[in-house]
Image (cartoon, rainbow, N blue to C red; front, side, top):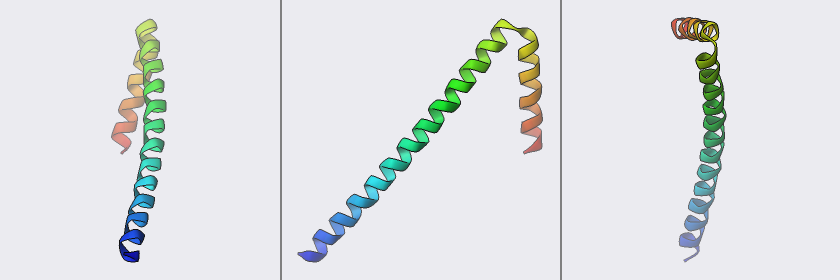
Amino acid sequence: MRYAHATRTAISYQLSAISYQLSAISYQLSAISQKLVARLRECLTAPQAALAFSSRLTAECLRD
């Protein structure tokens, strides 16, 4: 009985840790999404900004 309780407790802690990590990932993705939306708005309002952003993005992709 003790073993089963300890196992359930360990699983519960692991699930809590996973939940925390997923929340952190979600927060990071939200921040990235907000930055991309801001960049896209810039690109729609200023063609020069679109060209500069596209050039930077291409350079970063080629670098990786």
